[in-house]
Image (tube, rainbow over all chains, first blue to last red; front, side):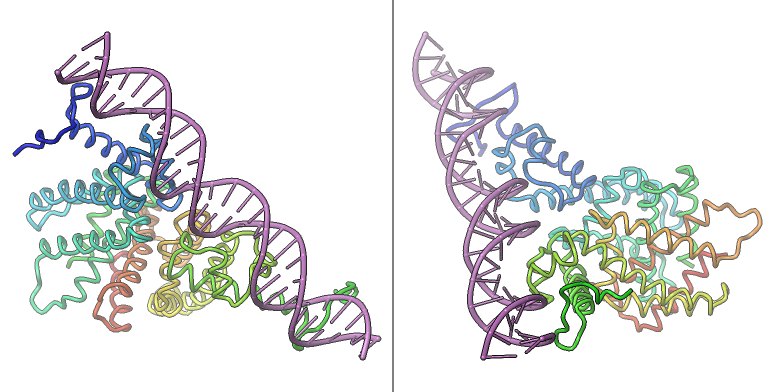
Length: 201
Length: 201
DNA sequence: ATAATCTGATACCTTCGGGTGTCAAATAGC
DNA sequence: GCTATTTGACACCCGAAGGTATCAGATTAT
């Protein structure tokens, strides 16, 4: 049963109504990543989003009911893509070599200041706090699922180290952009690998 | 030359006008720590501050020109006190034993969720970003001044590790409050000491 | 060609918070 | 007791942003 049975739905510019809506929605999400990732969620209004997306309010409310709803969508899209990129790299490392995973994380997140800010700052405040917690949980679970359990090792301690490492990566990502860490990409990844090995004995 | 020469300044409730003003200002700063540290700066208005402080707008503008100005004052007071508490502990450790410093940091910052949030989240956004950077710089400089330099060691790498450790502490502080790190205070400090030693070879 | 509908711009209403001013009650000096 | 100052409460204005509605022009189906 296709949606064609609906009364009014035309083809414009050669694209389906459904697809046009989807494109507009994506433009709004892109605008959200840009503005949320640079100015911060709290400093962005609906009109700002529309201006950045090249659309009008009308199309904002077509896809979202509020700024927070858009922010959620942006956060979800960013984190979903990140997991998609990192998980295969973890599998490739086979729980032994952390380098592929860290390289993937670097390319997928640390390389983009907007994503760094979204994860490190915006994901902890306001409505996004819930999503941020969810992402942190996912990350720690990933860590657990790929870290070899040592007999007699306390789980709580492992968990603490997982959070510690997550915080370390995040802070390095922030320092990488707004201050001067005069290091090449390879150098930074090397250091992250060292830190990882230092935390997982 | 005392300020008594001024025309109009009475004693109320047994306290000087100057001191009354100072007390009101401090009540506003306290209210700021409470609200900024729980709801976040962006979600707090002037009337909220006044309600929390038990004062009216009039006395807000007596000491501050805007919410951001109050936020700056709160941040400065918190970080100043923190440095006052931690620096002697660093000196006590004599650049060898990190435990006194980490214990002091724990008691002065990690133990209070409002301060954790202020440092980890609010200090990175909006007007406070500048102050947050300043505090991070102070912390890293402290790290450098008390970390023995190894001959041939790259400064940039040391700097990266300083940021990494700062991020680790911050993240552990966050996890400590909003999720369940089932560990005693002593245990957490023990782990932080271990992580410190792992990062400073 | 004509009607239907999609689009984009803009006008409008409403709410909320910042910021200022006024006023009565309380307290201190004389 | 009487005046002046301090205080707290409240009323008011104004601009910014959210949210809704209207309208002309462009595009497509018949």
